Length: 205
Image 1 (tube, rainbow, N blue to C red):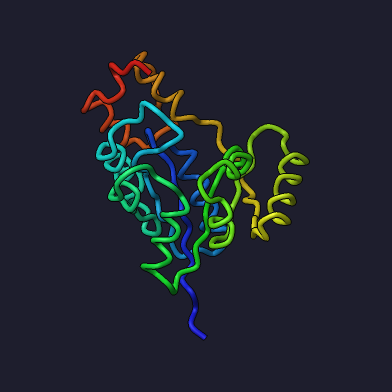
Image 2: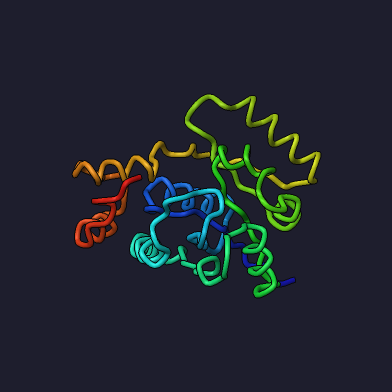
């Protein structure tokens, strides 16, 4: 029997991508013996406003992951017209790659919101969910949420042994605006790109 390729999906606005995203992705890769992690910058995220243009976010994501041979970049959401919905991304990836087993990587915060996403039942049916805990002590609350989703949707939800790293894209943008250091928060090549192109310098966010 052929080994099914196992691919993790790491979605997000990546505005900008930071080391927290990359640490969680690497952890998922190692813990669940994945073959690849696909970073999927969102096109038009319907739940967020004031997001940097897709081309710039794709460029920063590509720069950040290019030195990791098992990280790859997908523009599937940006190439699609209209809002970005995770269930559509998963559907299209599976249709294009029927022999791939997909794992959808989320933080604990997202897991608590997923029922409000578009067609959550389709997401839970089609992929295994890998969850990174928050830094706060959310053990019992998170465990209860996982059990509820497992029963309601027959979902396959598994925990990652690493916590979400306390780095936020919002905080990074604020620091850049104030010309403060974002070293050790963002890949050094992304920092060089942000500085060279004056990204986030004059945004009113």
